[in-house]
Length: 242
Image (cartoon, rainbow, N blue to C red; front, top):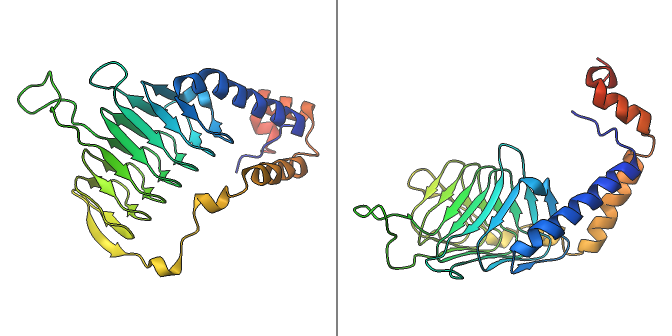
């Protein structure tokens, strides 16, 4: 496992720069971007289009070959919208593409490469036009979309449900179930009486969570030196002891 050899102060400098970048470049592209966001490598997060609202404690993880993409391509200028609830996670390669409306509830988790769209973007016989009727997508609270899962137009997914890896959802999914396959079908029912621990619980006290992770960093990185970190940059094998 890769060890973080940065001194504590250097990591803090990087985190401040990362937040500045997100607030300077990404916030203006949103109608709203909530507080306490964690946008990792925000230079690999792409946001475009009108009427994009993102709640508090949003987490996005961009990677060079797997950018997070949030886009609205409305039928006319200023049309279409994406609404993302509180404490939502978008993993590397996750994408939202809205023609008219995509709504994500609180605590939704999108795994690597998962994709949601509310349109086919072209009709079967006229490849230059969209279908005239909107087909919005609504994702309930605490829904989990697995690796490379796809949710297509007109779908509503109920709260707490799980979409398995590689599944393609073409019809509504009830709450508290697991669906899998192409097209996705219910393969398991979940027991809501057992209760769910969600990202809403994780970020119930966002300031406290930030203070906790800062304390962890301070302890874990306290013995790191600038010289050792620089050595690991120019000679990774030597720094790892191999």
